[in-house]
Image (cartoon, rainbow, N blue to C red; front, side):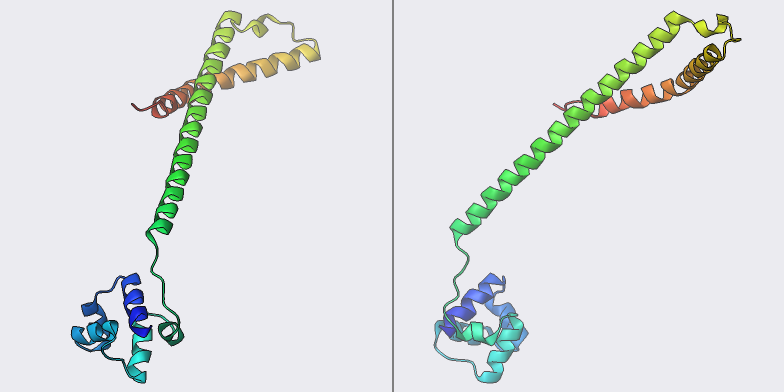
Length: 169
């Protein structure tokens, strides 16, 4: 039992017999003899082995340690593969949604620009003696002024965004 546990834990930790021997200040053949059951380490050495393998002495002396099974690793790798596929699909759908949102924003900016061009600032000919007309005229002028200043910058950013989020073949 001890011999099997030393070997199983050493392998699980990714250590060779030589590496474990160096940690314990013994020769590799000593490790080999322990693992084959030809000899047994004394109590002080058992404590050193447990420290080197970062494993309690009770585990070394206890029941047989089962090495990780290939089936378990395969199941874990399949689950990870599914998770990776789901993450990739989510990323793709977010990219598509952002792409179409940017295209929609571009269409809105172009439509508003076309409407403003067709209307040709109608508020300039309004009678501003009526307070309600004056408020609407000032609000319309403020919107038009702000839109004319910001639309080219936003439109440039949106076009760059559309280009960056397009589907890469």
